[in-house]
Image 1: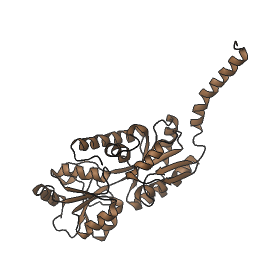
Image 2: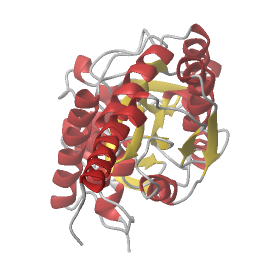
Image 3: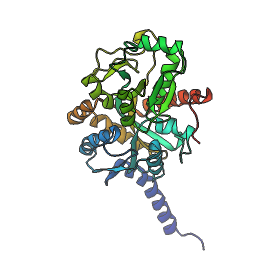
Image 4: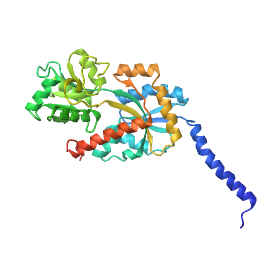
Length: 326
């Protein structure tokens, strides 16, 4: 049957409507609640950060933000679920860079770095090297470095999980010191801090929020901040670089990711909204009390940070210092 003028016009109208509808959907985003997957257990640093971000982001986007905790496998389970969701901006995940830079290299994650779209950073937290305050061997980082060089592999150093920012901070400290530690992985900071205070562990690389109460109580000594700049919460504690060793940045960041094929306009809307939300005074206060700092970024800046961390993880993997899990 030959097409009539009417069918041609109708087809043309339908095509125009399809072309117009995609940008229109992006312009009206969001039009329903957004799910924010937190791939860690309730009550932890990332969960608290998500719940501080929630009200601030809701106020900007004018839609509810539903927190969905999906812990397991160092964040890999929740991340896989989130990046496998429809790429429409209504399922996001809040986590740390190592979830997409390091975990896929060392375990059987159901995604790769190419499956995620970095949206924006949300916060930053310092990693600190702590020892027992009563341990006279470690009055300073220089004392620890000297003993480590004298007895390679003898000093025990803990971290909360393989491939975590804390673990990378430990490996970078080994490089800066010029020696090796007896590296001991733990399942979280709580058991590691018990062992450290009890004398079963020589040092621990911890995120500041969980270590800070013990530093303030005098049970632990912060020997160094594993960043390029001192932390305002520990103004008297110098960085590794400020103490004469090779400096490095092992700051822990939290950020929002979306599935890789999310429309550019939706990502831009989220990037701008997060930048505005992180200026919220209540959110900033909650994070300060946690020991973190609110910090947004552009998509490009976040991507560059991920690429830098991925290169570092690949280097350690090639050197055999970061190992694939069985």
